[in-house]
Length: 371
Image (cartoon, rainbow, N blue to C red; front, side, top):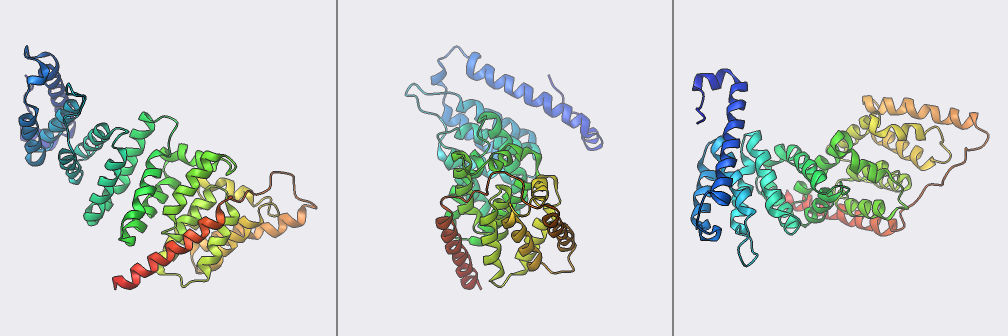
C-alpha cells in the first residue's frame, strides 16, 4: 500500500512529492489493467463502460492533480478496448471533456492530456483533434495562447516519435485549419508563435532540414506552399519562411511589398526580431550566402530592404548594416562569380503571391471593421 507523505513533507520537498506521484501513477495503471484485462471472470464487454466513464469524467473535472492524472490513465486504457462491433467506446463529448483539461495549471496534467488526446485521436481523428485544440485556443486566447508554445512543442515531440519521417505533420495540419478562423488577430498570433518556434527550437530541426532542402524537391515544395498559405497572415513570418527555404526572390518580393505599405509598430517589432535571428545559428547559411553576392543578389536586396524598413538606431539594423558592408568588397575581390546552381523560384510563386496579397487585404478588412 502506498501512503501519501504528510502535507508538510509535500510542501517542503518537491522531490518526495514527485516520487509519490510516480508510485501513484504506476499503481493506478496496474489496477486499471488488472480490472479491465485480467481482474474479472466476467466477459470484458459485460462491464458497464458508460457508468465507468461517467465516474472517470467526474473525477477528471473535479479532482485534484493526482486524481486527474489517474482519470487520464483510465481514459487512455479504455480507449484501447474495442467493442465486438469494432467501434471505440469513447465519443466526441468525452473528447471535448479531455480538451478542457488543457487549462490545468499543472504541467504533468497538461502533458498527460496531450498524450491521451493524441492517443485517442490517432490518425483517423487527427484533424478533429487539432481543430478542437485551435477552437479552444481561440475561445480562451487570453490564457491558452500563453500555453501555446508548450502545447505545440509537446505535440511536435509526440508526433515525431509516432510519425517518424514526417516532421511536417503537425504544422501542415495547423496551417490547413487555422485560416478557417474568422478572427485574423488570433490567426496572426498563432502564426507568429509557430514561426518563432520553428526558427529557434532544437526540437524543430527535422522540419527546418526539410524546408532547407531544395524547392526542386516535391516534398519541400508542397510543405512550403501549404505553410505559406497560412504564414501569409503575418508578412514578417512569411518573409522568414522564404529566407529559411532559400526562396530569396520570393522574400525580396515580400519585402518590397511590405515597404510600399504603412508599416505598423507590431510589424516593426517582428521585423526587428527577424533581423536578430539572422545572427543566430539557424541562419548561418544566409550569412555565408553573402560571400557570393552576385549569385545571391536577391538575398542581398532582401537584407538591404529589411535594413531600410527598420529604424536606423535599432541594434539589429546596425548589425545587419555591418554585415552588408562586406558585400561590395567581396564583389570587387572576385572577377567572376564562383560556379554553383542558380537560384530556384517556386513554380507556383505567382499564385502564392496573389494569395498573399488577398490574405493581407483580408487582415486589413478585419482590422478596419474591428475598431
